[in-house]
Image (tube, rainbow, N blue to C red):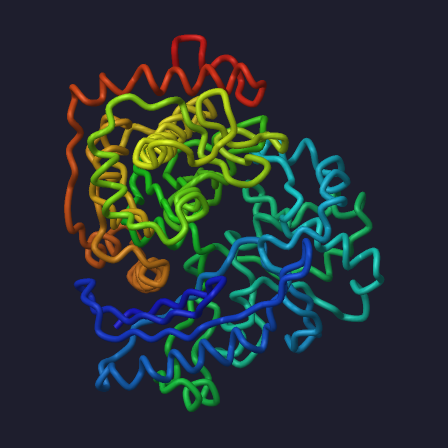
Length: 484
């Protein structure tokens, strides 16, 4: 059995699959947090307690089958401080906690040359500004050590503090090329490198399940615990997108793209950033938009989505739509001042609801196509297969629309959970071949083919949206130079 654990925002999920990718057991526990203004915290004790409870339930369903290894993924940029023995000293500051946003400029300036080489800009909710926030409060002293979210669970499993993985350490400023903490940048920021954890590549064995954790979870003592990756990367592994040029597009509340590139892409705007792949010397570039299916939930609360979809399927002409329901965009372009629009007006529901629904769905598809244009311009390989995952894939009409806009075949994985991605990584770490583990464990339930005539018919609307984004000053004009 191969086991993956996913520490999400709202739940902890544990999954066990056999060597053919069949689910043998699974369990989940709800996870809460505290939000106040720009702050978002969780109690690190809950991460271990709930993960242990989920693993204990999962273990009862294994029937004594041997376990090969386990890996943990978590939210990207979620950090906390611990004592030297690994005991949490602070709440977990979550991936979207913006309390340290004013310090992002200092973090960017101190390491501008490095961040440019790594292909990104330091963002307000990333982990390094949070480190500076703790620094300003005198908390980075006396043997205090920074940890990332999955480290808490991994440490409890093996019985001692563990190294962080380079995937979760990216937003803390870890140099993924030199594979070290950038001491010269940290010196400019007055951050002692001793407060930062050792870092290893994803797939590195961190230790083995200790007897205390075995008694708590029901896992066999001695089970290898493997360094994981962020939840976005885990979803990519669960989609089997591990070959150069292959991509996973996750459409949930927001739209996230993750792919594989032989070379490190570079996007000077900061919209694109890259993780190291858990195999070979490859890179996993991508980005996370503020647009997505959340626009449907915000604009059509409680609506009959099946009826809206049926109506939208009959709509032929829609105005250009940028389906952003909150302020600011981060991918495929960075524009804090961006606001959603429908035609030349604000994004709102009026008149024909089915037409607005169709415009929103098409707008998301257009942003997806634009994302691939931006990734290609940054130097990413984008010529391989595309997989769709996320809650929006339950809408077959929207899947086909997105496929037609992209004009490429699309795969729908059978089980796109990040927890499965961690099971894939655990299996690949033990066998030494992550792509082969993905081929064994990841199943495709369907392949969608694009309709070439529909792709051509949808192109003018895409060009119109790109032109409008350029006109508003949010998108680089080069993407409209050839009509999109």
